[in-house]
Each structure stands twice: as structure tokens, then as C-alpha cells.
Image (cartoon, rainbow, N blue to C red; front, side, top):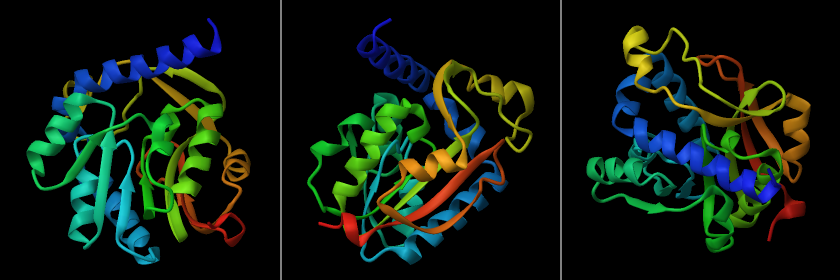
Length: 226
């Protein structure tokens, strides 16, 4: 398979899976431990921001976007899954949701955002695509803008069906509702930090409720401002 064909295939495969599981996603993943962690991470993100304009890539059904609104932020949220977007708009009719590919973020206006909340989405890009995406994030952020990313720990890139941990409610029956092959890229910490050059690390920690991962809060460095 050529690189171009692989790129088309992995995005199409993920899109097919997320459209299929969209109706069940919120019910299975809204575990108290998961939400407590995510909301604490969003509060930290909000505290670092120089303003209120926030971009939410891979927003899914909009749960994080709604919480960010509750923190008096103004999110513009996007996803590629039409079913996820329909759910997001249904739950938040006054929110701003649009259809966009993670690889096309450079279509948005430069310097338009004070922060980018990229939770649980950028690991669906190939490692080459991730480098391009981080460059796009730098361009989209205003001076002193903040980027949050959460990534999976490991090595390589591959298709797989995720194994959800015991913190997700509903047991095997509920977890079965989220079955479906997805593409993931895995990283070691040093590999991630190299890819995130051009940002200053404000804070980093392990993703405690998940099965191996990192989260970083990063500020656009002066050298890359503009």
C-alpha cells in the first residue's frame, strides 16, 4: 500500500468505527473517574489561557466542549464523524460545531485561538501527520497560546481494537458497544517532546485513569510566536 493510500485508508477506517459507535460512546465513557480526571485537566487548561477563544479538535459528541463553555470559554469544535456532530449539535444547539479533518486544521485562520484542547484525538494520526498537525496548532495559536494534548504510550503505529479498562462502567456488555478497529500511534515521552518542539512545557503528567498515556499542557514559545 502506498503512503497516500494508507493515509486515506486509516482515516476512513476510523471514521467508519466512530460513526458506528457514536450513539453508545457517551454512555460507556462517561465514567465518574474518567470525567473527574478530564474536568480537572480542563480546569488547569483554562487557568493557563491568555483569552477565551478555544479550538476543540476531535470533539466527538461535544462533552468536553460543553464543559469548556461552563468555564466561560468560547469553543469552536470540530470532528469528522457526521454522527458524532449530529449528537453534539443536538445536545448543544447554541454551540459551534463543524466538520473538519484533523489534517486540515491549517484551513482555519492563523492566530485565531488562545488555546487548543486536543484530548484523545491526535493519536489517530500517523506520526508524520502528527508533526504537521503540531505545526498547524502553532500557527493557529495567538501569542502565548496554550496547547493541551493527551497521547498513548508505547511504540509504533497500528490498527487495533481497544481494550477498555475496568474504570469504564457497564462491564463487558457495555464495552462491547464500542468495539471496532481503529488506527493508533504510540509514543515514548522523549519522542513526544521532540515532536512538540516550539512549545514550552507548563505541566505534564500520566493519564491516570487510562491504560498508559501522557498529557501535556504547553505554551507557544516566543520563538514560534507570530
